[in-house]
Image 1 (cartoon, rainbow, N blue to C red):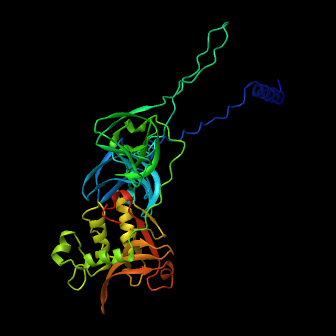
Image 2: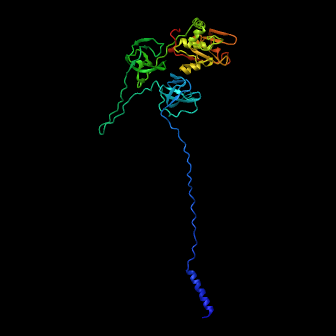
Image 3: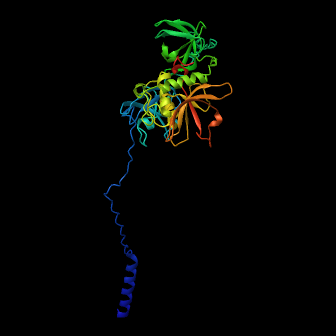
Length: 408
C-alpha cells in the first residue's frame, strides 16, 4: 500500500478516536470554608437594681412624719437626727427641697430630703395605696347579684343595706360638743370606756394630728375621733354636711396686750432660760424679736421647748414645717408673723388682737445697734408689703386646740 495512503488512513483514525474520547474534565476547586472564630462575643448585661419590700435607714436630720405626702398635712410624729426609720414604698407628693418623692412609713409619710438627703431615691417600690394614714376612704359594702338557674325567672339583686350606726368606745373622759370644734358648747360628758353609737364623720378642728369628729347617733353632738376606738372609721360614711365653725373672739384689747407684754418685759435672764428663751441681744434674753415669739409659743400654747430658730424671717416657716400649722396673709388673733425686713434676718412678733376697723395689735421685741424695745403696737396691713420698712408679712395660725385657756 502506498505510504501516502497509509498516512491518510492513520490521520483519519486519529481524528475519529479524538471525537470518541470525552473532553478533560476541568478541575473544580471548592473554596476553603471561612475559619470559625473561637472568641465568644461579649454581651453586656445591665444589672437591674432589685426592689426591696422595705428598707431601714438612719435619718440624717430631724424628720417630720405627716398623715399625707403634703407639707401642710397634720404632723403625726417627729424623729430626731440619727433615728432608725423603716420605709416600705414611695409616692409623689408636694415638692420639698426640690424633690417630690415621699416615703411611706408605719407612722405616715416623710419627705426624701429628710429621710435620705441624697440625690438618688431609695430602692423601694412605688406605693400602690397612697391614701392618708389616719382615715381610709369610706366604702359601702354591696352584694353581687345572684342569678337564678334557668328556666326560673331572674331574681333582681339587692345590695346589702349599709348599717345605720357604728359602735365606738371612749378612751378617756370625753366631752360631746355641739360642733366639731373645741370652741363650741359642751352638750354632755361621756365616761372613759363607754361604748356609744355614731352615724358618720366630719372634718373639724385638728386634735393631736387627727382632724376627724364622729357624729353621735342620738344627734346630740360630736366627739373627737382621737379619743375613741373606731377601727380607723373603716366603712363609716362621711356626714352629708359639716357645721360651720363659730365666730371667735378678737383676742386682746390694747390694754390687755400691753399688760401681756409688760409681764414678758419683767422677766430676768434666769426666768427666761427656764421658759425657754434662747436668743437675746446685748446680754438680755428678752431683747430680741424671736425671743418674744418663743415666749408666746412656749407659755401661751401647749407646745413646749420650742427654740429651734434664730432669725425672725423664718419663724413662720419653721412652725409650719414642725407642727403643720396653716399659714396665710390675714392677721388673726394669736397668729405669729414673720417679715422679710428690715434687715436680712427679718422680724417676728405675735398678733395679740384684731380691731373692728381691720387694724391689729401686735406684741413684739427688738434690738439693733442703737436701741431696743418691747412693746404692744397697733398696725395696719398697709404698714407691710414691698417697699415698706418691714417688707412682706406672713402669718402662721396655731390651732385653737393648742392655745392656752388663759388667753382672752
